[in-house]
Length: 129
Image (tube, rainbow, N blue to C red):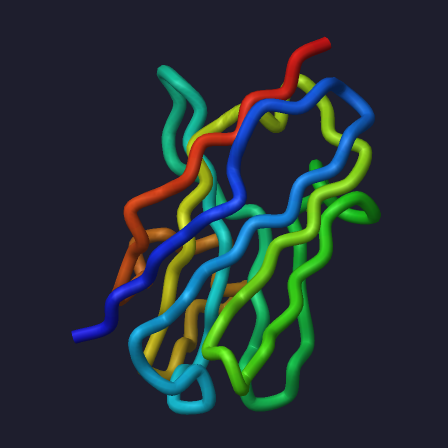
């Protein structure tokens, strides 16, 4: 059983930055994918981006591309989401996720919340304009 604990959420003005962290209970090297998803009030949970652990390649939703970045600290078993130039539409609960089995979805992992094996509890991000 994998436990994921997010932190780093908060309130920020538009144009500002935040860095979210996700501490995993297991060894990140053993996972296939880690990713970030978000859910705004009244909307479905949607993917933000992911990282393929084996190679370290990252992929992002068009809405955040160029503004968000994902990184790993394997020694700390921690995943990060750096969010710059935040917009009001980025306001949501942000969730860390793990896929610890091979993924053959045809598109990137972040496009498939139904393929997540483990979820964190979420951290709130609020961007005011």
